[in-house]
Image (cartoon, rainbow, N blue to C red; front, side):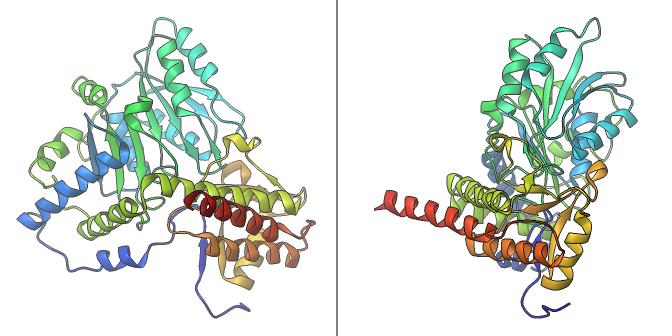
Length: 398
């Protein structure tokens, strides 16, 4: 490795960089998870999470698990064996959620989709209207598909469900969008939001969440899929007292409390605007390089990550290895059928303009060293994009 000094650049789309404030909070001495101090912490965190999710009338569940655990929790608490679920094959993680649903004994109607495009709300409405005698119990969609960098329009999907006059629950994976992109749960009519700690929440992996609407809570009363560890009711009963039905990830909860404080201090609008700026600058760099983003239409691009396609015959993983070896920077790999065809640049969580500029500089130097045919000037284009945004913001402020 030629660049031994400085910090490692972690530019994968999660786990993301953990801020020093959060690391210090996680390093606090562990406390009694059955004591009054912990109960106060639990109540404070749950109240802050409801505000973050924009969930007024429901509840937020915290599990010591990855996002895959939250996928399962969302399904087993709302559905029964043999229930039909409408899902869309629009990315690696959408396909993974489908696999869990099938293994749980649900009947999945998996709609083939173009991974470069978002879920089509018209297709949702069409399927719901043509469901026949076996109604769908839920529609499950990934908001920001982390494998592709494509974002689906959740508000439009909710409208499509309502236009069809259907009572299906809307379950949304927001693992790479929460705290990076808008997802107002109540306003958009999402019944269960699934997410994890290791992306926009700026924590290490290990916590997962279900933010649950009143409608989904009512559905759980009649759901008969087996659940024990993932049981919402057991969790809610203990959370009401400030505790958990098992030993919680106490120190990660310390970190969560600090991360939520940081998000409140920056302000929700500012957090979203920052992610939008960094995403736009990254796409400007890709365009200037003469490369192509996997997301076919910039209007549907995620503000959390950008997936960059390498030219035919160029192994994207070999390019990633050159960048890691020479500049100590990690980029995301292609997943599933995209292995070797693209690399992913994460620009979410604790990240600012200067850090992104350095990351894009590493990519541009890596493309050159790896012998990838491209045009120079991507970093310049990104910096111009960021400077233009900064000038506009300064003019507005004055």
